[in-house]
Image 1 (cartoon, rainbow, N blue to C red):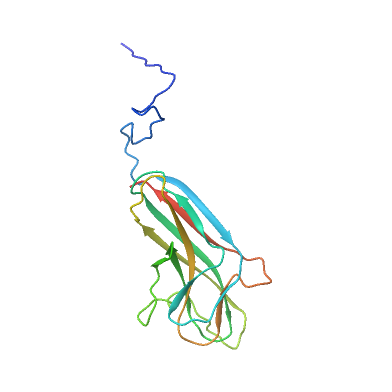
Image 2: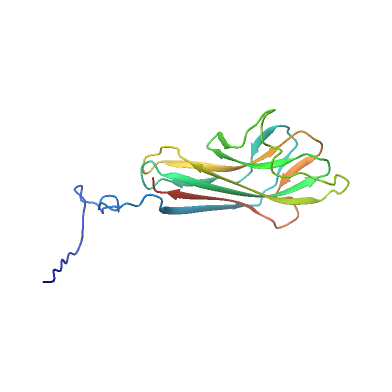
Length: 177
């Protein structure tokens, strides 16, 4: 015996469209959405043992489910203007540095550095990923930003050096919890 159920529409108890979770489907670990921001504005940094937010790198994402996780990937196009200052990529959630550690025991040195300070145009690409669990409710927004970290040493480290068409990026994926 074959059974067929035909319906025109399924609604939840509130009269809205049900989500996969409402229907009893397990979507844990599923990518729910992806947001990407390319940014080409120059950020130059001479700081030491610290991170600074990269200009125009905001990537705003609105949670589609409660308690989702967010996988963030920052790719920075770095330029060393002489000197030996090491650099790294970091990530801010709103105003809080969540990937990267400032200070004397920090990791601003761990990405890359200019191995030949006599050469004034050393370029590198640095990538950092971080899985964030900010405990957001569905409909709440969060802003992630790329960060440029630098360590002690001489010179200036820049993201997206002026005069060239290189761009850096930040990609945020919402992962069902």
